[in-house]
Length: 247
Image (cartoon, rainbow, N blue to C red):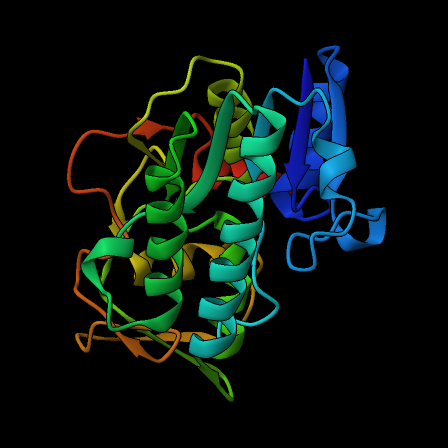
């Protein structure tokens, strides 16, 4: 099967591409560095010739509201246009758990537009909404750290290993289109403060977690349950403790 992976050089995209190639599929890596640009349209027509599945893992260069909105609007419009011409049979997009519950956050509004664009397109689709990745814990520590303290809200948190995201993206991409949204998350839910503390303890980092009830993440006000699924979800197999041992 010929598959185009948009964002195929990123954290998830590079591993999805490797996995699908190993399984015997013809994979086209969609990235400007590979001659495929979803904004300008450069290389899209050629990349989509004979392509049955498009996996959209694209991302804006910045989470800034206007940058994200402009990127996902332009990218979505181009992809739909070129995919219809090519007769693509399945479009899978990786999105974020909670996108529809905090539309005042520009990046989540942009991701919702990305989702709605493919729903309206008439192209068979699957939307996967994922929780935050384990790999983001270092970003939390960096962004929310002040000197030797890390200020973290006691929001609900159910992160997932990037490797499990790769597994689910690859799995659903090869299945029949769901024409609906599915959610994925890690095996365990707890307070964000506890995940950050576990990471620091394992790394023997002297930083101190200062918990608060402000319900903030990356300096954004959020609902306490924004970062966790509220209904059924597919849970990854890799626990945070198992992930720590190899990271």
